[in-house]
Image (tube, rainbow, N blue to C red; front, top):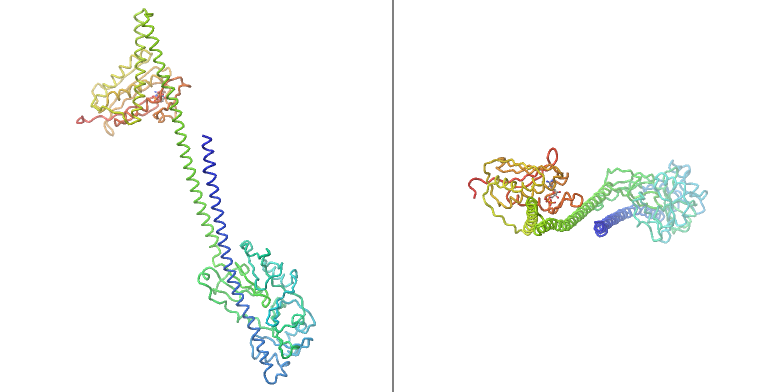
Length: 605
Ligand code: ADP
């Protein structure tokens, strides 16, 4: 039994568990791959929209250069150095203030005593553009058509502004290595960041926009144009500059109006893919993580926690194109549902395997029990055959040798021989009948017969044997005939088997009672009760005693011989007659076996 359980565990249960574990793992991997794809898709959207926004700034820069060139080409260009501010603002609205400064730091425009905006510009940027003071700036410039980004910035140069910004977002990663400017990826929720965000060196693509302390002259170098951004009391100040080939010593510049620039950046193009539009919202965030434009309009979220975001670059430092999930719970919910489904499936399969295993084991157990019972049966039957044969041989030898002189003794010995012979034939009959029934060859000779007289006769035939062994036998039954349709011998065999059991399991209480009565409900039937005051059937075995070879009192412990077939045969015969044999315990101790048979109706033959 233990071996079977072990085999089941090793061959079925453990491999099933392993399979289930593999299934869960592969589901998790698939889910991660799907999420990674999703993340890449949204990052791609953020990148391309960030580039579009950055292009707007680049086109402003181009426009500015064209404006300067146009002014220089116009008649009366000689006084441009003094009138540049007015002329620029008249022709080009994105400018707040226009300025002209030489590489040596002489500013000719605007006038420090001019309009308030010019005075403010002078106060804020005057010392910086005149190279009197260096400043903390974000910048890029163009030289011979090449973009020279702020590569010189040391990786560990964490500016005050950047740090302020980092802490304000709480999620901003510190820059650790030099990366391409347009790969300013960042993912706000680090645990959702798939492993693919690592570049070939294993470094993560953290935010790269950082400032450096520099002089204006230094940034200009020998470049032709550029953008310089500064934060003045947390307010963005954006300066465009241009150097014309006509006079390379003069730098023309413009302080951009950030509100007007924001106008130009609106709206985020509403041409998102339909499928994307159902899943995500996109917002352009300024340096304070306030939305400049939102698609779809009216979308609200915790702006500081997008799903993915891309920084615009040095021109607009800390501005981001951010992508938000419209329904963040959807992803988790579908993952949960999938997990739950798989979990349920695995549980059901494991239950099915356990149930199947249990069925197999219990069936095997049944077969083992049956095999053991058969072995017991063979030894029991051999013993049962041997005991009466020994008595018969012994008493017949005594008689044959004439060693018993008294007639009384001779009669008693002959009675014993007859009783043992009938016990022998009863046993042989039972075994033969049982094997016939097992093969389905048992035939009955159905006839109308009086069950009352049949039972009475059988009891009377058995009475001398019982009384000779000290039993009190009582029979109670009607004198009138009760007709049943059945095989006389087979029905007598039932009664004999039950009487024989009453004798065997009497446990010293030598009293056997047989009652016969007729009942009408639900259909007319006859009931024969064979009762004793013996051991009774142990609790829980009331039905099992009708199973073949089953013995509630085994020969070893009880010392009572038996084959475990008597009740099996009795029940099978009764059922073949449309009736049954059942067991009932008796008040006051002992057993009561009830044989029920249907009464034949008067017309039936
Ligand atoms: P056996 O040859 O063992 O008597 P049976 O089929 O006649 O086989 O009976 C099956 C079992 O039922 C017996 O082994 C015994 O444990 C129990 N049994 C049968 N008759 C009685 C009875 N009158 N009182 C107590 N137990 C009984």
